[in-house]
Image 1 (cartoon, rainbow, N blue to C red):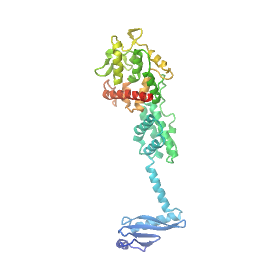
Image 2 (image 1 turned 90 degrees about the vertical axis):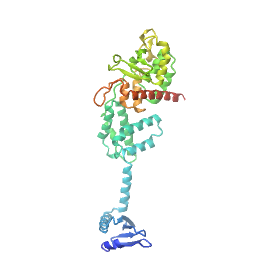
Image 3 (image 1 turned 30 degrees about the vertical axis):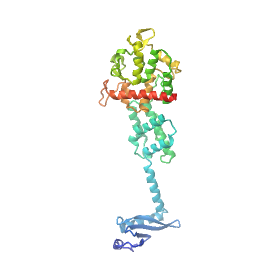
Image 4 (image 1 turned 90 degrees about the horizontal axis):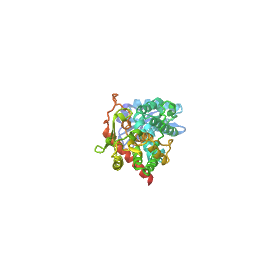
Length: 399
């Protein structure tokens, strides 16, 4: 090399047509009619003549262009086609941009989930957006490790959503397997977490938590033809999702229509803390209809044997059996698990709102127990959204 000098390259003027100034070893500078100057390397590979772009002058100097030429020539000697190598690098870079967990998760939703029910699609999308993307969304999926995924699932466990943690792990596994099938990951790391999560509590209270089955249950409850008292208790069970004993022992003095809420004293609560249950419009309607029938006594749901004592603990259970739901399918206590699952996974409410409304002991970030009015506005909104949701899915089921 050495046929060109810096001054020749610098002083090369544009002409009516593009022209080339050769330096040697296939290196030349292309002088364009618009005054732009481009370094090019002409070489032969596999019996074919090819041209490789080496950069723009003066950003790439003559000395740098010569160095690049030596580097590319060395590749040719080793049997590497520089043009093909560059194409592969570009392709790899493009794939890398589409190789993040977030982009693959979005693609998985678009390609594999569109035939699923809206509820299932929404629940899966929410799990991805709320729990997975914030921590690993920008990470190349092939670089994500099992401990990283476990750390995410531990956060879900810590908020008391054990079953949700298991479901998120399942969703993550589906995304990793999709990435494997499309050539962007080699293995499903979620499989490494078998046995790492806490086991869901053995629930002795059967509960229906799948939206389709909940819709069927609500239709059946709405069509129940029992006594007014039992019918009202049955219809309020999913709306209030308090403990069955709290519902049975509910007294009219604890129902505050003016404030739109039920106020349970501490002595009636398992955690010995008072609880406010905001009333949805639907719940108020049921109670208002019952008021002329039982408000002359102490209990909202008096026993059929006398108003001096509350309704039997078997009353709602027997009603469920009449509707075809035995103790292995749905129990009175199961309405709590039903609400807990769907409020979190389908409607997306914050777990502390749900747990406080369930009458569980919930503490703030300083370790202090929330008082009974904490998040009251948010919980009131949640209870109305919950009632509207149950009403909608039962109405959709009947259409």
